[in-house]
Length: 186
Image 1: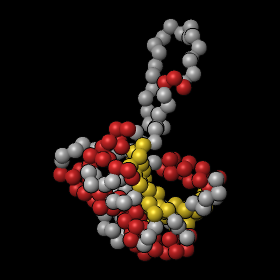
Image 2: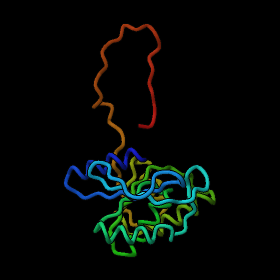
Image 3: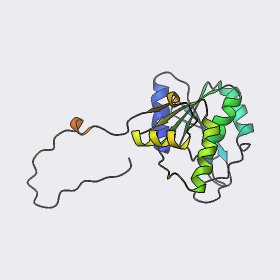
Image 4: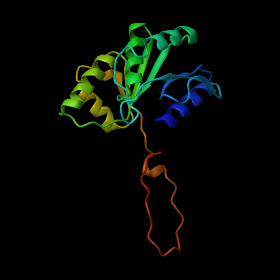
């Protein structure tokens, strides 16, 4: 996720957009503001519960976000991952302040358990009326199932894989050992 946000930020800044990133940091780590190329990064300190997650309060980021929205002249908030407390809080508060929003999601959740139902309800309220992007057809369908009252026209898919036809044909190998296919997150 961090690499995706970083690369997207750099690509947008190269196209002439002013990009500001708001991210969290744990106690004792990086704080304040830092420039990464042409991208300004704000670090907000949060208390981590477990596995770098924080409890959603919908007030955690209010003061920081209000200051940043005014200072930076933000017009669109792009949240990444429906499980990000900071992304959901910023999208919600941005919408209350009239700032546009987009949520990119790559998560596939089961449907039917209580934890997922609670997350889906929170995501439905926060993202209602903003554009959502699923990174695959399956993720897009999952978003529509989990948030049935969200307008389908505001949910789209961006492909996260190359079609096999676009991959180069590897040269014949003389190796007699096993041929490996590595499947991993990029």
